[in-house]
Amino acid sequence: MEWRALGTVDLRFYAADSLFHDAPRPLTLLNLSLTPQLVMHRRSDDQIARRLQISGHTLYMNEITLLRHALEQGRGWGFLPDHLRPGEWQGVSEIATEVGSQGLNVTMVMLWLPGMNKHRMLSDIVHEAPELWQRR
Image (cartoon, rainbow, N blue to C red):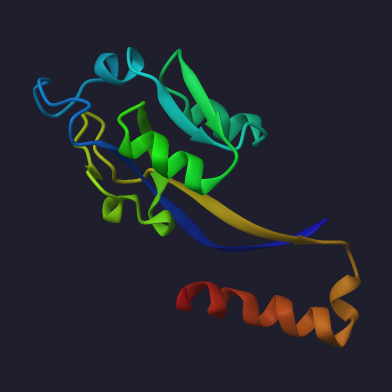
């Protein structure tokens, strides 16, 4: 396989404002581990899954609407990508944690079969993809 890194997806901790209302800030990993964690997509890369799972009780959501509703209802907290804009959801905000948020990201990579970029259309896509990623 040939590949090209496109960029990163930044991740942050989010929860309903009412979920940790009595807990001192920043929240500790113990606070997070004792509260259900809402996770998008059960099937993900094992390495990424190990990095992202903090709680012993995880609830997997396969649809953004379900995730949003569960988060807004205070059913758990989420370690979510910024592009979902969870901070704009009703009663949900970013939560301060002892680990902060710098460097918490996932690198997005484009893969294709060797030699396939010899085709004009795929070659153009491979060439343009990083610039398109930056525009998002």
